[in-house]
Image (cartoon, rainbow, N blue to C red; front, top):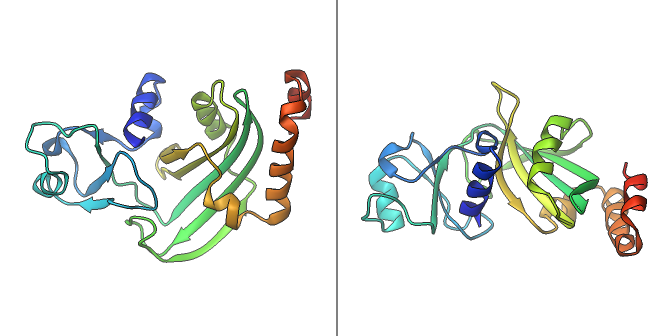
Length: 201
């Protein structure tokens, strides 16, 4: 749930690592993004240019949007990062980061043309991993973070966080790297916490 991710970030003091959120359409800085709280593959997501457009699309007549909708900052930039992690009890064991290059700075994926993609070994940085760790306390399994990097601060701007294998790992990460991550997942149930720590890379 995209609204719940914003709530969790606020509880962790990490609001700055996500797009700015507005609950009143009149307070927003336009253009911005309006999206359903639940959904995938860009379904129902729109770039909006006025409070009137927000209220029309969301069917909202009250002062604030309902929890079924998220109104947030439009994160701009040609590059978007997708990082898949294998996690055991909050510990990050494996990382695969793919950077996607698109032909527009303002877009709603997948309604944009992809120019290129590449596996990155310099990203995520340790600072970005620390942000991800804060969301992962007690979690085990695969998880995927989609984000941009703010050009002025170098901070993350997390667009989505999904507790599943992402399309990047399924399709775009080199097969030997993806295979290594999946094979490691197979062995996790038989490992003790000490073994997991000693094998961390």
